Image 1 (cartoon, rainbow, N blue to C red):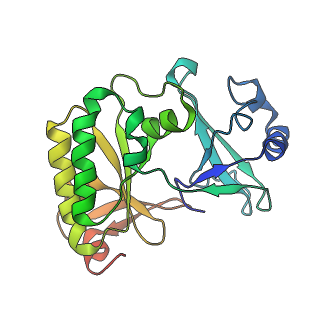
Image 2 (image 1 turned 30 degrees about the horizontal axis):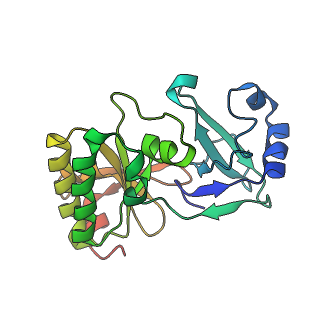
Amino acid sequence: MRRHDLLRVPPATWDAMLARHPDLGELPLVTGWALQGWPVIVRRRLAADASGDIPAALPLPPAYGKRRIAFAFPGDADLHALPPVSLRDAAHAAPPEWQPVIAEIIQLGEAVGVVPRVFGSLLWQHATGLSYIAAGSDLDLLWSGANHASMRTLAGELQRLDEHGAVRIDGEIEMPDGAAFNWRELALRRGGDTVLLKTMAGVELRAIDDLIRGPVA
């Protein structure tokens, strides 16, 4: 399991999880989440998580408090991995004013050979049909499989689009082992600097030169 992986949870597995976390059943939408067929997302491990558990989360929409809810499943739980959601597939759920920059980002992905994936508000609006995108929402993207030659280009072009587009672009470049860093750190720093790398186990600092010295795909 990697951060941002999506899982479908059968209702029986969901009910068993709620029995382990009974306080969650009192929150809006949570009890019927699995019955609706809505996914959950794999998150970073917390100190309270048992080593064999699968850490997951879901966010409530702004109308329900915009709360991020964390829980875990036993390692042998009946869970089904879902394919990642591409920006192209989720674009229909984005506001009209986002569409021009989305089109440019899709073209950028084609140019660098990486299909941008979504997480954040656009993912959840696409996956659930509920209203997650609000004024000030970011467009959160995950770029997996960029090689060392394209990472700088990718970060630079995202910075350009972010400065001139109608929506703030956020997100991460993911390494082959699932560790990821915010693309802004690469755009705003030079070789010799370090970036904050997020992993399933926590965070660590790594030199930019180490990240881009060789192929990462």
